[in-house]
Image 1 (cartoon, helix red, strand yellow):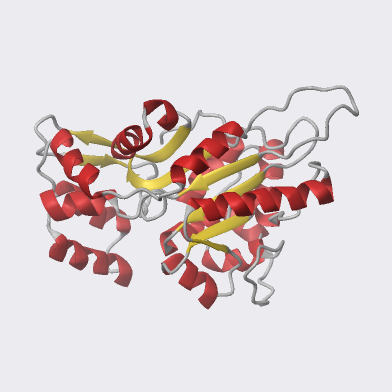
Image 2 (image 1 turned 180 degrees about the vertical axis):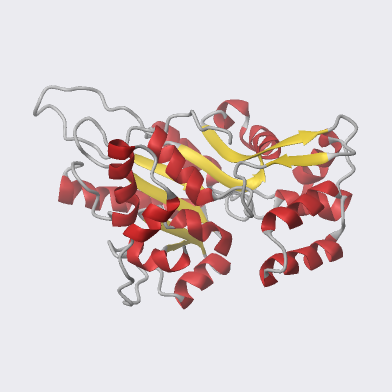
Length: 316
């Protein structure tokens, strides 16, 4: 399985006591298709250069009904492509629409030393190319991408995903975030715990969302609907400007309450169990994480509360 080697936290400078109030680190994980971009990169390719929209919808139904795994269906979709990478990208560049406020949000993350990581079930070469073109290579280089790799023949006759995980998902986003946490320093030198944020749009994002302290769901899409139906705490957003505004608010509230030390006020016990376990016993198994989750409270919530872990345990 490919490893993740990029940093997830920003080291704080060592300062004499009393000179500066500690500031909590924030780590952001985000879906790509439907979240940063309004369209799905794979769907654009399949509809124009592969199986076509009608067949893609049929294959999507096989995933929804559970008759076939996501990985098996995806291999059929990617295998249907017959287009050179450069030619396929032309149609993506024409049809993709980036969130209107993502560029400014990304600059906000850079200026505030907030690591921003893409977690996707798509193919890394495509996602990197899209970010390079829409943001510029320099801005794109600040974004870490955790996705499946790919083997694409020069003539475009063969597109083969190289799956991150040997399971029916191909890429288990929750496992990737867990791996990311394990590799990173799980707690800062001053004992404070980073705030973990996840941004998504679809139900497929839920396994990753359960690893976060704060969940942002794009308004009006399936992830928000699922959260409402199952009383899962989340914060809705229309554009990344909303996320930036809420992050500023959450950071201010946390700073005023905790002074940037210890646990964040949006603390997710499930996620932070993982941090403690990773620092003491190495990488724990997914089964041990699931076993650690407390039962759901059943209390309907919209705003982020510490009970997010118990609510999110329903979707493991």
